[in-house]
Length: 248
Image 1 (cartoon, helix red, strand yellow):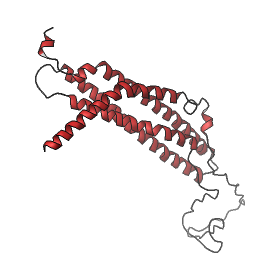
Image 2: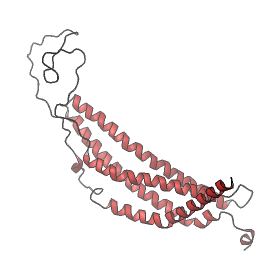
Image 3: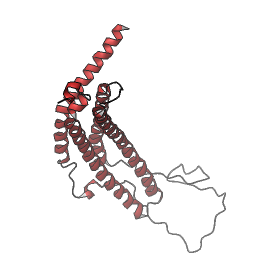
Image 4: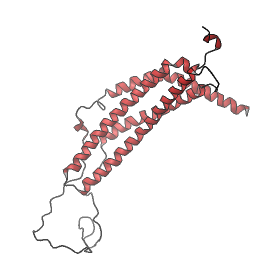
């Protein structure tokens, strides 16, 4: 039992040391790194048409029909020579077939996502480390002289909100791919309608701007956390002053 207590105390001391190094040295370095990344060509595109990508869904030739069309019965069986063997017959709903191959993801945005996601995860890990650091320094509950404790709790609340917000960035990325897949399926189903093709381009442009905003928010969150912790570092580490200090 005593050995376990010593191990827990060693873990707490190690975490406190890592958190102080992170906030005093790691955060400033991270802020500079993110500023330099936002200034690169990958995040500084002015012409968003550069991220457009062909869908690989050709527009089929128009079907010429006679002016007199004979309505087919509902249970009529159809033959699809291009999709199945000429001798086989199928009935039911027509199945879409992309004869030109698969529709690829937008490579430009996939490259940006690959850069953004590690920074999202790092922000979550850093926020979690600071949260545990402050939690370990909150003193026992007692009457009086709780101003420093309130500063700890307010800082802790700010860190928790940053951690929660960073986790939602992952959901934003997954929603983009789901939304794009739905619009691309519309293009495959209605290849002659240009609006659906334009909708894919607009969705890609919107996601690029959203990813740029995510990187800005990550940089801003590092700045705000560093600022609020450094300004209140003394009260965070020593929330309650001694009686002798309060007399002078």
